[in-house]
Picture 1 (tube, rainbow, N blue to C red):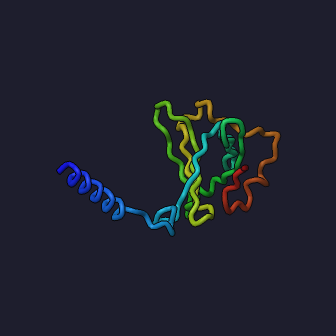
Picture 2 (cartoon, rainbow, N blue to C red):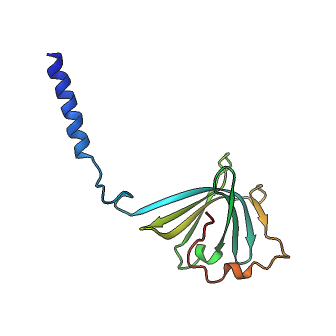
Picture 3 (cartoon, helix red, strand yellow):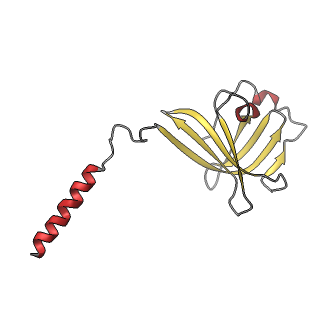
Length: 140
């Protein structure tokens, strides 16, 4: 009797897993989206956008330039989500669809007094870095 019950349980588990198995032809789900999340070390404000210094892994930093126009108007390449007063650290989530850049979501502290915010040095000419940006360039 115990063997019959055990066989029935195993058979139902096997059949249930077969019903919910994913299609292996689309490993990213039906939407085709995937993302990478990076902690932000410092976000420098500039009149044309943000210079973001992010942590690539535990030992290395990267930087990228994100124009302000991505967050305003008709562009759907950027989104800013302001964090509350908790302990969550600012981050940058970069979304790709079918292998190409889709959009970026910045999770930032609302108050610019937070240690993650800084002003871009005025002695650096960063204007050229914010011109004609079509997609986010990440340092690997």
